[in-house]
Image (cartoon, rainbow, N blue to C red):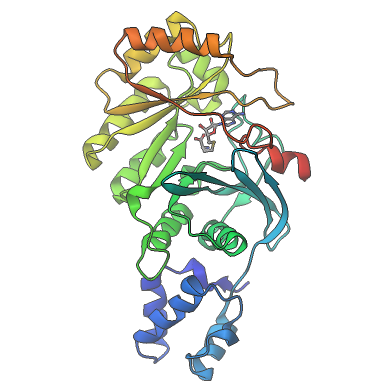
Length: 340
Ligand code: SAH
């Protein structure tokens, strides 16, 4: 099968074009058509010689993602259900705020990790997305809205560190001046705690932010919620995170979904405190977004207040994420699960 031309990093495209006997500047022109003008067919590349267009057409494709469905929340969050060339379905969420426009992208069709509270793995794992399918989500959303995305979070369906090579290629393309020109610190990768992936991400010096779905600092509870914790437990995870922060110099984010009667007791706050000690991190609390297939509910204000006051007593700094997209199926994998 022919590769999508946007699976190549701009530097790789340049090498390819030079090896085809064309001058290097043609590569910048092709990138402008691909990422600036976002064309879908090679023949629209008007300033590219017909002979080069022919070579590109014979060797590559430009696949586009098709919109299947869109849900708009009252708070401005828009969730898109997009169809890939092989009919697999993925979801992408656009999250506007005062100073930025964030796109939450998927990295896999389905997920292998089966976290208990999450809808993403319920339909099983289908396959990894290639780089052009990750960046393609941004192209399609920008085309539909006419707006420019400023920040990327790899927090949609799938586990980004389980698809590391394609993830890193997409980061490079999103960042490149001839790609999308999005700063590396404006991108955040979220993981359920795949320690080997965290180590590789550190070694690759990608410069992106790292966010870890912690959700409990109690070994048994975390293993129950996030099965991969049985393989890479809390001590191993904390060591990998320490190495990561020492390597890059900035803190990691610890995501903690607040689930009533599960991880919001005084003891849970104490365990969280000991996990955070000595780790350069930012704590982000997220009220659980109920999924009909799962038994849990959303915490109320009193429950949230009680837990956060325990955390405050320990002098731990945190942010509380405003629940968004509650009137649409904005939790990870929810829309995809219900529409497949
Ligand atoms: N696999 C990666 C990225 C995808 S999940 C990871 O685990 O981090 C993105 C975030 O949404 C994770 O923190 C995940 O735990 C959280 N999440 C999933 N389902 C949720 C739900 N129903 N309510 C609140 N957060 C949820």
